[in-house]
Image (tube, rainbow, N blue to C red; front, side, top):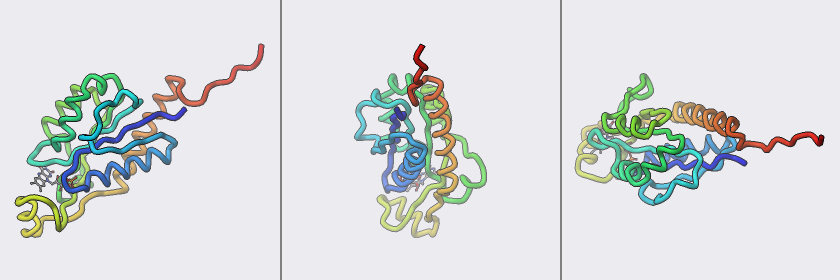
Length: 180
Ligand SMILES: Cc1cc2nc3c(=O)[nH]c(=O)nc-3n(C[C@H](O)[C@H](O)[C@H](O)COP(=O)(O)O)c2cc1C
């Protein structure tokens, strides 16, 4: 039986959703059963063996849907393996070095005893919502800094960890014992 994994995300302009889908595709290729969903639409995580939560960064904080998701499901998240990711920087910095979680995301990480957190580059393109977004774009500071090979590599690491957990809990293939 393959592990059942949720990838929940908080997004305003959709670029974090695409990161979540990329992560999910890698997990599926590794044989896991994966659902991706906007964090605001998930009310219960108890049916999942592992949960990944991603949030776009706005003004130094995780997207509110990601924050509320964690608050709503805190107890259940503490009882299962959890990985976190953020997406934000509108420059190549996230591809060049590890960017630590924003302070509140770090607290979430500690509270949930999350296995890992990673910051991926963000994306801001024409049509993004909001006055500040339009101002950033007018100033030529937008662009797509999502590094898909890096996202896929991180997801492959998560898949390996989940597989290791699954095997150690005997959830993978049932072992057939020889007849006495
Ligand atoms: C108003 C505004 C505030 C932002 N604040 C941050 C920030 O504090 N840190 C950061 O790394 N990126 C910041 N960004 C960049 C976004 O995180 C980036 O565009 C991200 O990819 C958006 O994700 P989404 O398309 O899923 O909403 C900000 C963008 C906007 C428009």
